[in-house]
Length: 90
Image (cartoon, rainbow, N blue to C red; front, side, top):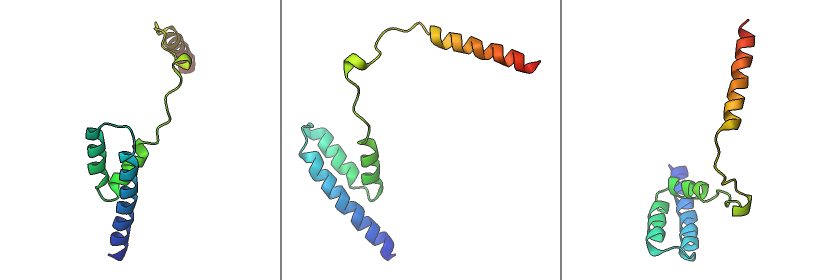
């Protein structure tokens, strides 16, 4: 029982630190309130928040592949796989 209380107290302390961090950002008020309410969930809130917020930033738009694709690479790989499957059946 003491472990559960200690774990809950520790997670709420971490949640409090994260709430302070959220309120110092440039987000609008509604997301701040939502994240703050979410962080008040014991143990699950801080863990989920840290997991969600740890995504890497997106690449620079110049490095992103934004060109339309006709799927030719996928279709060529699919046809190679079909050929290999036919050969393995023999």
